[in-house]
Image (cartoon, rainbow, N blue to C red):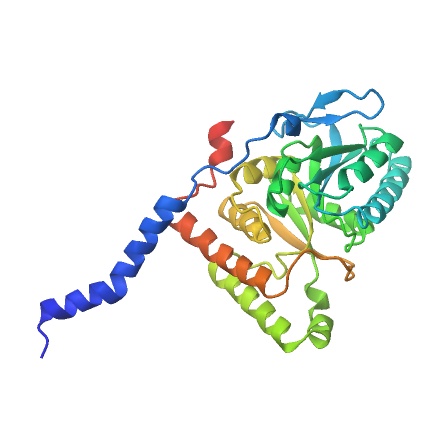
Length: 322
């Protein structure tokens, strides 16, 4: 029969030591501060009329517009024109109805090797750089990194990030904005598009494997990070400027799971969040690789929770920097 000391040794080896090794691994490999450093050319945008480079403002500056729309774009020369056409039609119409409704679109080219920047600059030439600005990143950072740098360069009182595929109807911004006004407290609030009402139809048309992985992903999100949000991944999220300034300087995850980190930080900071059902359609050309991307997201979600639990990451960075 094993004595008590031997049993304790086995318990330590089998149960405790893996956690110690995990902590050591995370301590060695984790970067405490988010990578928000920019190349010199990423600090400014081109004014197509003059050809001059003009510095981007900072999220810490006072707002000078009502709305900023951030459009992360990677290899989007084909889909971006549809999104910009629909968005500008909506924004111009709304500005005619509401003279004080001012806006900008910031297209963030996430290190594309196609003509994404040239296409976006064409729209900037047509509408002016006060309406459409292009932030071209020197290298690919991932969707989260692109949204973060675009948001930190925005001028709006409220800031929307919207996918370049125009999968969500831009006209739903009316209802999302109305919801944001209703929940904002002390200048803080998030209203996010949701496709959860479309889940039944999606399940009916997808394969067993895709549905299984989708449910596993949702289970991981619910257990580890975000419990009250049904759709964390919809690319249509609206923030007050104050909320964006609190959240985005703290974002570490730069790939697909960054939405979960955004919502996790918002919940930890007790920022009010509400979902709004939006009209959404499937658009060809998604950059997500089935199975691989979902497994990558599941891994990132696990590490989001672990790193914040061990205080290796900090969601109060913005208040320290102010």
